[in-house]
Image (cartoon, rainbow, N blue to C red; front, side, top):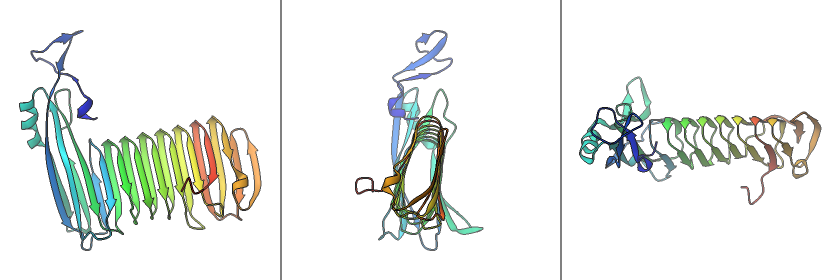
Amino acid sequence: MNPGVIRLLAFGCAAFAAIGGCTVIVNPGEAEEDFTLNTSATDVETLRVRWVNGAIVIRVDDAATEITADGVMKVVAASDAEAEDALEDIEIAFETTDAVPSRRTLRFEAPDSSLTKIYSAEVEVVLPAGMDLDIDTVNGPVTVTGNTGVTEIQVTNGTVNVTAQAGDTDVDVTNGEVTVISTAGNVRADVVNGGISITAEPADDGSVVALTNVGDIEIFVPADIAASVDLRGGIGQVSAEWNAFDDVDNITSGAARLQATLNGGGGEVTAETDVGTVELDAITADAA
C-alpha cells in the first residue's frame, strides 16, 4: 500500500470526524527517513530480500564489490509527530548466519500495518554479477535488471518486471502483472490475477511456462527454438504466428487449445489462462 495516496484512515476512539459510525482520520500525518546499508559480496552466492510494503528495485553493477541498499522508510499515522516516532519501529538490515555463510538476507521488519499506522519502505539494491536472487514481498512492485544468476520472486500484490535477465527466472504473483525479458535461462511465471508477457531465449532443452487464472499471456521466443508448444485458453482467443518460426510440425488445434512442434522439439513452451487471450510469436527486433 502506498502511503502517498492514503488520505483517509479509519481510527477508532479518536477525536476526529465520525462518518457512518466509523471514525476517520482526515489528512493523516506522514514521516520518512532515508537509509543506506552495505555488506561485503565476497563469497556470497545468494541474496534474499524479505520485504512487506514498498517498491523493490534491484540492478547489477559488474564493477560492484559490495551489496548496497539505499532507500526511504515511511510511516503514515494520525499526526506527523506520531508518524515520526513510529519510524523507530522499522528495522532494515543485512543478515548472515554461520549455517549458510554464502547467503545474505536483506530484511524489512516493522509492526503490522493497521488502521492507525502504515509502515513501508522503498529500496534500490545494487549487487555484483553472478548472484542468485530470492525475493519475497507482500505489497509493492519488484524490478530486477541485468541479473546473471537465478531470479526467484514471490509477490502477493504488485507487478514484477525482470529485464536483461541471463539466468533462470521463477515468478509467483497473486495479484499483479508480470513482464520478463530474458536472454538466457528457463522462465516460469505463475499468476492468479494478472497478465504475463515473456520474451525469452532458453537453451535447446529449456522451457518457457506462463500460467494465470485471469489475464492475457503473450510469449516471444526465437524463430529457431526447438520446443514442444502447448497453448491453452478458457474464455479468450488462443493464437500462434506459426509462419514466423523456421520449422513447424504436428500442428493440432481444439477448443481453445493449440499444439505444435517447433524445429524438431526438445524444449517446452507452455501457456495457460482461464480467462484471457494467449499469443505466441517469434522474437523480432521490436520485441527483443
